[in-house]
Amino acid sequence: MKREFSAAAEPKPRRTKTPDEALSALMRLCARAEKSEADARRLMKGWGVAEADARQVVERLVRERFIDDGRYAEAFVREKLRLSGWGAYKIRMALRRKGISPERIDAALALANPEGMRSRLETMLLRKAASVKYSTSHELKTKLIRYGLSLGYEYEAVLDAALTIVKEEDNTCDEF
Image (tube, rainbow, N blue to C red; front, side, top):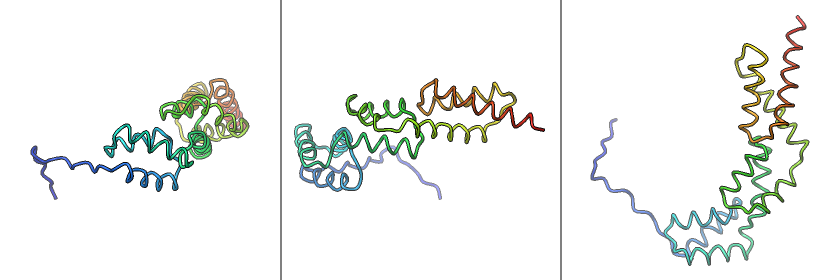
């Protein structure tokens, strides 16, 4: 079936919310999942809530503990470490883009287990090594380092893990 789009087609009008509607909608959203102050402001801007009203809504959500940027940062760090396999640098940058203060980011990252992060990096690099094509150990090492850095891990940690994997790969090839 072919759809025709006319140039005169009008965009859907955005649904606006009153400050009370925005407050109750955000309370429901925050009860289901952690939201940051910046998330709430962005949503209210999309709903057409005036800046002064949005500020009051956010203040009430913070006062009633529906929104807590420290708690949000901790949940974000846990999720990205455990589920996405991100490193500290990538997590830090994502939280900064979300408007979380550097102090709260540092506090949330301080709760992360460095051994768990190292183990997760090794797991991610092993999985990558199994799926990439390479002709030399140098090429494998380069691809693993690039991948580890893209995940947001520190260069030294990535280099150590990549060298360990490349050595193991070389040893398995020598056994024939």
